[in-house]
Length: 67
Length: 348
View (tube, rainbow over the protein chains, first blue to last red):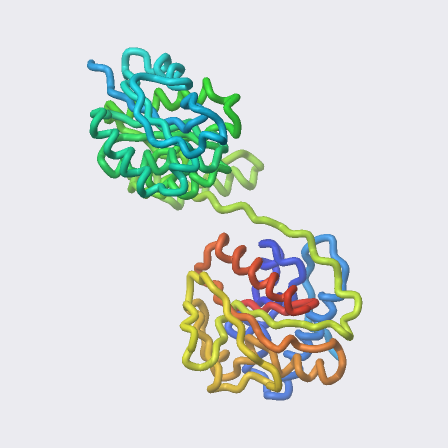
């Protein structure tokens, strides 16, 4: 899950949670220039791929991952 | 005080007709108490008299509750019932439906009614709002105690005594809100609770929240490089115009839309219909909620296998936990059927 309310999501039953940016735009930041915003989004998806590949016993929070 | 005229409903088994083979036993009225009704009569003492017992086969009743209910109504009238006691049905599902229906009909006619069943009985969820249902154990081992509680409750109902809240009286909540004036303002009561909590002392919440169900984390995907990944969003992103009229809140359904061959979700072609957040950013760039552009880039770079050809959408805001569970299970089945290995779910 990508959620701006990461810790809340992890507390309520989501096991792999990537910290999103903000509620209205969890996967980006309109205050950045288009390139920076796009790169941010790619980092979040990479973080999600990492979470998907990580063995877990309990809920964990992840961040975006640089290339 | 004259004894209340109590009518008792039993299924074919407790009514001493037979077991499953008698499941189609036709609705019948017998004079006086039968089977557990005798125990009920003892508990009622002089306060009530079991004037008649209504018996019906569980299959007969539950497969046509409409017709069954009509027969109950007629019987209650002909017997001039003051109170109806049904069951107890314990954990017998069809019996619980029949008992619940009988009591609901009585209540609708203005005749006080009460039944008892185990919390797992489907009759509880279906009828708790239409009649009083007392808790009962799962099996008839709990008969004597349950009859005693039914008798006491029936007498109070028959005498039109005031009945308190579920917390006090023990029946399953009927979803009725009664305004109460409390001595102390909410802020004081809340601080008392907080103080107790900080000191590790017990306190009683005024609002009961449903318990959080945790699931075991799924095993990791071993071969991400070849994994088929689907996008799900609860952010309400739909094709512009919301062609399937997806609800903006209190969701009860989910949809999928095709993204095959798309490099990104184009502004103007998609919109967010979610009622719970400021949708201006998402409408200006739907990839903020469904990150398709970033995923395509990583798909091209072989960071993972492929993006599943459709994305899934529903909305969160106000959606009941039971609906969410059902929606989740249905989506999971669809993912399985389509060979999806993992999901990225975006929440707003």
